[in-house]
Image 1 (cartoon, helix red, strand yellow):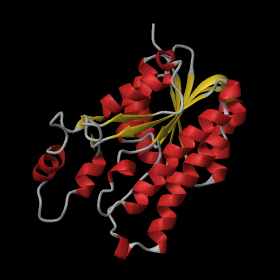
Image 2 (image 1 turned 90 degrees about the horizontal axis):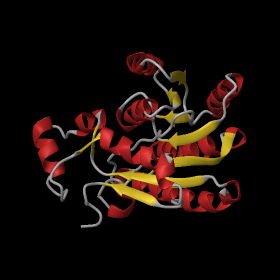
Image 3 (image 1 turned 90 degrees about the vertical axis):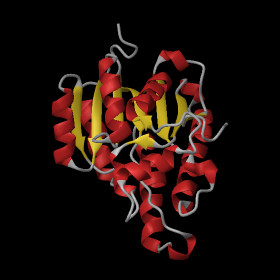
Length: 249
């Protein structure tokens, strides 16, 4: 018996990394999962790899028509949503002196606007008692150089969790934020500085973590499962840091 037997879940940013790991775990625990991501080819390949209990819907969370199409598909399938993991997001290292309008608009659009409308447009199809999980980040409390816009956008996401937990409490809908620390995803390779090997970069970023290693995406998915399931039935409005102790030790 799985922790999400008979449930319907939605995961955005679902083709790679934490989103894909969450889809796998939710499906293993009995949920039927709608996967959404921008890159249709990668999304379809991920869905094919998982096999049963998933449906791929290509789309961009910054495009409201794409979100409408996602939820229309769910309604057409005769389903309603029990778990929503608004995971789609992104970032990049840009110091204050080099921030452009394009960088600001891109991250605000993806991390703030995209998260907001992913949840807002789900409201008519969310079951009472549903769980909403927002992808935050420990960057929002660290003050890391070069992550000013990203950190601010994730601080806004954390604030959404508080506000929406209050606004949706009458429907017994729980809203929580998941704040991953450094996690094994393709983004690590992409972020490796020029002139440094991937192995050197991984060693450098793992060094400040009290547990002494980078998280596996499956560990973040396990935390998402906790927030999605009845195991967290009396938990709402929190930000759960899954960071090996980075922000608390």
